[in-house]
Image (cartoon, rainbow, N blue to C red):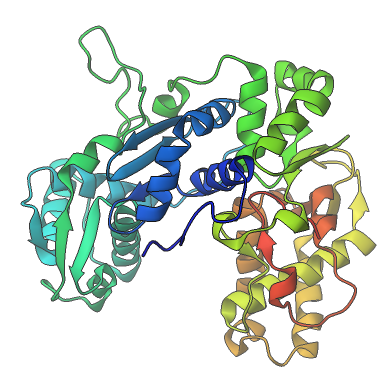
Length: 412
């Protein structure tokens, strides 16, 4: 049985299409044996889905045991979230190594082959805890993509430090063909025009992007919690102002979403009546439990309240109108006050406030894009006006009823 269960029971075709479109915007790979019901539903509605996804710059490939969505390269004007460089390095090293490995292979063989690839490009291999964590995360990503399948054990066994942990993997070689972007810059000889290993920024800049400003903006709206006006170029701003209220709103409805358009930017939000957890966004915010993740999310929510009530608005260095700013010293001090009032928070984080501040920043800045941090004599944190959507009226721990989809902005 697929993790997604049966699709389309008791729902009209339009609703099934926008549910599937939401799913495919958050899960770019559906693979046979794991997602059979969803693949079958995508096959039945493939033409309608291609039309909806093309409007946000995506290409849909439907094979008998694989559905792959190719997302467009982000516009050059977009602010990209900071990624995990080490994870990316080990992901591509492993992809390069898998091509020559047999269909069934032990985890130790995969690790040895990837490290051999690292040696070829003169990348030092330390086998430190941080490196092993990045390597294991890269392997997990390949499992999510269906390129690797765990037959026995789990790839996280790599963290144990054994040379050859008891983990047996299956390599789906044909799926390796779907890992690279569909259109990459090449020269007249058919080789990459820019070597991504030597110039990753140049390689990314050379990727083909939608020529239509509206498609670029809608692609961002479909991927991000909020699109800030300050991140758009002139053509994108003009489209958002002139056609966003009509064309952008109509396309949002194709995903079962609604357009919110304000001076500081725009967002596609998920109305409460159409909320469906299995087709929600990339990560829940706030977290639902009282673990360290729950501590960080609850602290982030309460910090948002503090910014909205006390933050300096529109000061020097603000990314745009309506942003609330505070120095980092205020952030750490406020977190200290909150930690004293919430004994259920993780003891490790309550006793290490700079680390807690860094973890909160990790949620609000790269993932949700609700925070911008500016350097200088003293670091300043600037909170997006869109963060006011998550203000709370009490300091009770977050519960499932308020958790939801940051990637699409759940209505609260």
